[in-house]
Amino acid sequence: MDEVTNEITFKEIIIALLVAASGVANAYFWKQLIFSPAYTDVTLFSAPAATLFLFAILFSLLSLFGKSGILGFSAIAVAFIGSFLFIPAGAAAFLGIALALSLSLLAFRRIRTEARIAVFFGLSKILRQGLPLFFTTLAFVVSVFYFSSIALEKDQTILPRSVFEFSLPFLQNTLQGMIPGFRAAATVDELLLEAARSQLGAEVDISKVPKSQLEKLLAEERQSFSQGLGIKITGKEKAADLIYELANQKIEDFAGPYKQYLPYLTAFGFFLAVKVLTLPLYFITLGLLWLAVQLLLSLGVLKKETVTIQAEKVIL
Image (cartoon, rainbow, N blue to C red):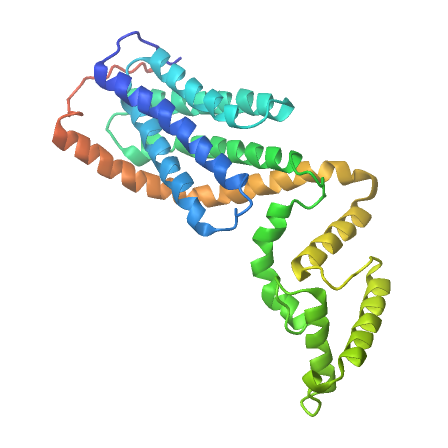
């Protein structure tokens, strides 16, 4: 059983306050990223990534060296409960608070217990008892934020717009192979003109075709396109918007009566993706934490001390 003491030092209070503040700040920046319409912009990841590393390092320091379990529990509770103030109240938020708080406190207790019974101080050995679980908790929190962003979408489409926009750059080459000259920002009419140029070949200069004939050709192509896809096309739609509408239509047809469960499946897939990304973050955090410990030792904030550990054994 993890012993909880009431011995609190000023240094420990400072670390606890920083844990609470960095946890809430990390959630705020993730919320800004996930709820942003420009969420595919990789430059927006800098603030969430920086605060995530800071939160993980401070959490680890508090777990490793904190003497007061009550103070540690309180700081972590503030960090994670405060995180969910940035999303609308609801079942997802309350479930998120309960599970995130339980997992984070378990991670804190595991590291704290291992640090107390360890014969020698080994960061990797001690932290592997709880730091991976801490990153799992962060992945869960981010996925709850993502699920909330889906719930707030006004069009209530099955495939979230943010997922589509994030995936579109990776599909660009494939789409260009299927649709000549495909560009996400191009209109349907512009793509139809590109297709016409490809079909007519180099011997025909499409720019010299009379405007009336060109309009008639485009109208015929749009009609054929509309009948084939089963949706009305004006020609002014952006290619990305058309593909997004088609993707949602196909997913809805495939899911049938189970389409209401797809947002949950999407959020779970998002959780798995973030969880995979936390694996390299775990090892980077270990390296940064080692540097932080060395710095704190050199500044006198931490000190080395030889202690005697009593162990209970069963002998013959």
